[in-house]
Image (cartoon, rainbow, N blue to C red; front, top):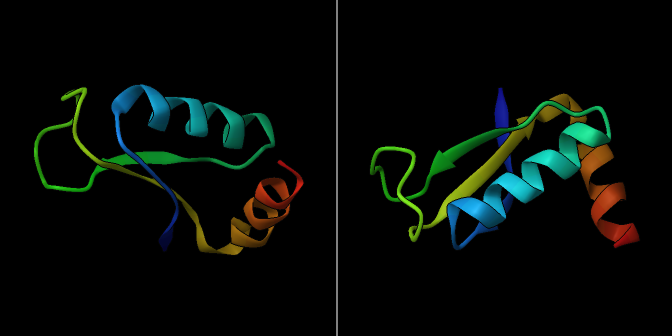
Length: 64
């Protein structure tokens, strides 16, 4: 099961969060928040991580 770790206002910001999370060893997915096809730059996105890795992401975000 995947849970939302972060919201982003654009695809570029969502990809930056995804790279950060994956750099910490946590797989991440990007999903459009509004249901539009992925690739639309200026729409909201959710960065999703596996539920069992959510505690790792909380630690990463706390250190920022």
